[in-house]
Amino acid sequence: EPEVTQTPSHQVTQMGQEVILRCVPISNHLYFYWYRQILGQKVEFLVSFYNNEISEKSEIFDDQFSVERPDGSNFTLKIRSTKLEDSAMYFCASSVGQMNTEAFFGQGTRLTVV
Amino acid sequence: GIQVEQSPPDLILQEGANSTLRCNFSDSVNNLQWFHQNPWGQLINLFYIPSGTKQNGRLSATTVATERYSLLYISSSQTTDSGVYFCAGRGNTPLVFGKGTRLSVIA
Image 1 (cartoon, rainbow over the protein chains, first blue to last red):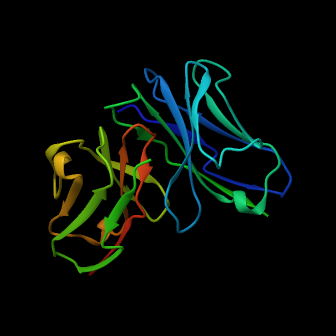
Image 2 (image 1 turned 45 degrees about the vertical axis):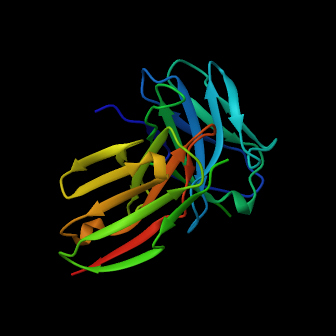
Image 3 (image 1 turned 120 degrees about the vertical axis):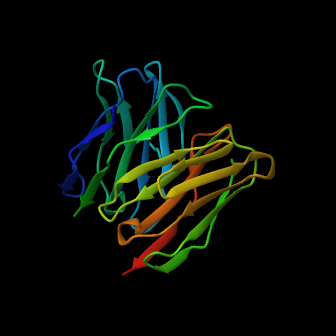
């Protein structure tokens, strides 16, 4: 069964460093998403991406975040200068369409900023 | 955007017991999903169920879209069912998650 894959599964970084989280969405999907979950809290939407541009973003997705689809398969989330409060589980998801379709989630990347 | 409320927030069950988890939405949704988050933090898709009833083994789900709620039934619970169960709905915004129900199944 096709699945969304994320790498790495766990990343530890120093405060102020840049990190890139990587995702390979399901191949025939057209919509891509990033969500994050701070420990013990609910899963929150960050950004959605369609046709090589951001289609929606939340208040959390500020200037330190960026997304990119550098080739036909990868979808990345970059955090420019990490803060302690960026420590969270980051989930990538993809779907065929925007409405009335199921979103499939990756297994997550646990980011720890020290 | 829509608000998603889940109940109960915590649930402790004896192995073999049945349970019902509930999810209420503040507005109509065109996408409704249930997830299980395992102890390693992974989100496992359980059901995509914008309306109607589906069953998968010991789990089943029912969504009554006109009344803006969904139910997840777990029968004959096992210790491996432990974890957090999230529902998430989509209206005109991306998927919005509830705060989850933390289920602990005790042997």
